[in-house]
Length: 370
Ligand SMILES: [Zn+2]
Image 1 (cartoon, helix red, strand yellow):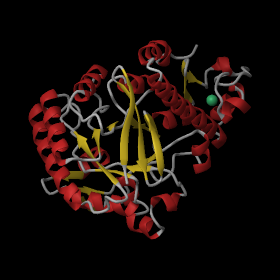
Image 2 (image 1 turned 60 degrees about the horizontal axis):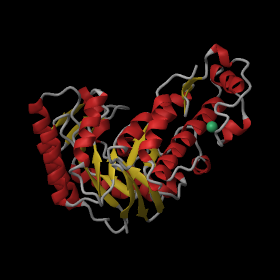
Image 3 (image 1 turned 45 degrees about the vertical axis):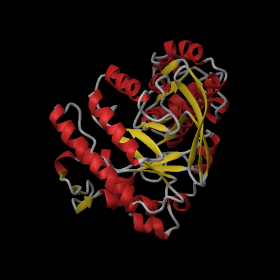
């Protein structure tokens, strides 16, 4: 069922289309994060309105609460959360890594204690596939060990061997391939030769797509860009590439420029709830005193519900008062902006004007709006 077609390129930037049982996804694509089966503060209808094509769910969190068997009983994640468009579930590797003192890694898998009640659990590559098959997302990820940063080369080497073994075991355990796509995850830290080994061995196993994991975990931005540049020349051109957990608007553009097709990150939603809003002019800190009596919209050129109905002054008031509506309105704008940025990127690639687009957009995105 799943397939990916690369439609156009401009420089190294790619525009493509992915087909899943729950609809098509045009790339490059940004996937809003719905950790617990909800993109915080957004209803599915609002996600459609901000033009989200696919959302992400977290295997670890959904396994802990409410549990994958309950979700399966409800008819799967799409049915349970009433989202009839594509979903991707992550492998849980990153969350398990974040448990630090609460987990123990072996060749078999990871033993860990729930961050909620301390109850003991084990994730093996087979178990992680079983959970994700029960959840029923359109795209699922193989279990990986995500080495923390910084890690010694020796540690990363050993961790990579485990991840490759887990990828093979997960692929063997995967039975629902008629309805779901399985992506492998390239690891290897900041070491090019390990990244190459990881990519080549995964390509040998022939996954439906390739995640690039273990980046955006604290390394320098130059290292991240060096690794995605490097992998761009190795990964197959006819499969989607997904840079996991990235990033700011400029990170997205800089990595589209290095051949990446898919992104996810909590940043636009999490920051929005705190009143830090992404716009084409840079980041707007809406609590700043100068917005107190500013009755213009966040972005006069933006077509989102927030910008077409509400003023900076009102949104500042809501956020300052910790009102739920404030968080909803800022989230609507930031997600709309991320989706629009991806659509603009796609258009620029389509018209073979990628470099001009990149040069025009990059200078303002990282600024704080004054
Ligand atoms: Zn807006």
